[in-house]
Amino acid sequence: MKNKSISFFKQFAKYYNSLSILKKFLIPSIAGFMFFLLLYIYILSNTNYMKESITKVNKESIPIYETLFDNEFLLQKISFELNNAVVVKELDLIKETNIYAKEMQKKLTLHKDTIYKKELDNIQKSFNEYYFEASNLSKDLIESTSSYDYIHFKTLLVVSTYKKVLKQYQNLREKIKNEIKKDVNSIYETSSWVLFNSSFAFILWIILSSLGLFYIYKDMSFKITQIVKESENIAHGKVNFHKRLSSDSIDELGLIVNSINTFISKLEESHKDLEYAKEEIKRFIADTVHQIRTPLTSILMNVEMIKDLQENDSLFSYIDSIDASINMLSNSYEDLSYITSYDTIKYNPTLISLSQEIEKRIDFFQTICKMNLKEIKAEIDINAYTYINTVELERLIDNNISNAIKYAQIEKPIYVNLKKSKNKNRIVLEFKSYANEIKNKNKIFEKNYREEEAKRGLGLGLNIVKNICDKYSISYKASYKNNQNIFTYTFDEIKKQEIN
Amino acid sequence: MKINLLILLTVLITSIKAEIIIVTNKNSDINSLSHEAVKYLYLSKVNKIDNVIIMPLLSEDDSLHKKFVKEILNKNIEQYSSYWARLVFTGRAAIPRKLSKKEIKQKLMEKNTITYMDKKDMNKNWKIIYEE
Image (tube, rainbow over all chains, first blue to last red; front, side, top):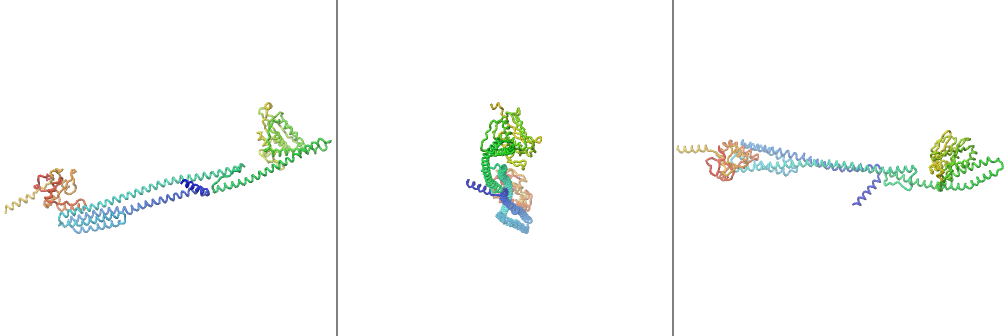
């Protein structure tokens, strides 16, 4: 029995899951319709029963009841007329009572096809007996020739038959009255029962259909929430490729879930391809960087040697130009080198003098500035120490200076200021350059964002800076003041005594 | 002849002046009845007086019966007959049987049985419960 029930519920769940949303929502209505159809049949059968009872009362019981009253009246009339005949000693009056007797019999015959046939037959028989005896007695009394004993016995017979007829009338009347009472009670009980059952059925239907609709709503709501959540994850790039949306149903939502799962599968394939491509590019860049390193170092060394070996200044401008270009190339090379290695190589922080490192990098960019007709003016507080990796600090400084050189106006100074705040243990590093205002200061640190498409670059520099700032909790900001773009970085200062 | 005529007249006068009484067994529970009670019992309107069921008897002595009907029931014989016919045809009561003197004597041996008779027929076993 239990297994059958489980099997039934499984079959129903399977059927439910195979339905469309519309059909699912129609289940309670259809179930309700079937339920009320059965209730309607039940009410109809009971109504028919009540109708039959009413018909029986109206067409049988009440007319017979009325007939009995009429016949009793006729019986009284007959007895009255017979008495009159005796009083006035008229035999003809006895004959006149025949009309009433026939009327009585006719009325009784009319109802012979009812359930009271037996009783009516008995009444008719008893009445005939009475009428016969009473008529004879009337004649005897009128003629008064018979012996008195004989009359006495005849009167006894008449009285007993009269009483018998009356008793039968009374009994049948009582029986019919009880039948009517029973039928009326039955109608009342049936109608009350129908009313009670209908009310109960209505309440039951309300509860069951509400529960059904609530279940369907929860089921839909769960699936929609799942779809929305997964769609949001996809939209935010947080999709879990190892997980698929579960759906047992094949309704519209099930189809959407399947589509999303297919989409996730395709996305996973694309993601794999992209990851593979990314790895390939990364490997390619790493290889390229590796391949560039040796010739670049060689070029730098050779340029230095050429500089040293020059006997006059005639080639200096060319050599400076080569030097500047190589330095810019070196800067880009270092960016690429950092990007390809930061997730594989651990860049550990060390205590670094920001003051010394900035001066060193400004010195590195002197030739580039000269070739770009620009000049760096630095105001650097000494002994500003912080914990940071050297390579990463170099990337931070180099990218800001190279950007300033690239975008700043010609023959206008580029300011590099390093200030220690006195009370807050903070070091503020600023890069200021006269240039057009940065249009989107929030996006400037995003990857591949370029302010001017005409000035091509890798679009990686400030994003590298941002990642380094995030790693060391260095606050960063881009602003514009007095026709200058200002990039401000705030470091935690490490005091000298803390070092010791 | 004159003597005979005188005797006949005496008998006639005596019979005319016959006094009707209502009697019962001397052991009966009833000691006296009113005129109305006698009428009601003989017209079958009641059969009980003071919770005692009483059975009235009729005499087949036609002259006594007529006299009783006339003097006690205050009806003529036709009225009496039609009254009983009505009771019979409406099933209320049958006309009582009329009894001979012997039968009456027999019946009066039962308690609470009453009958009408000429006072001169009274004997010691009975008691008068009504007389005019």
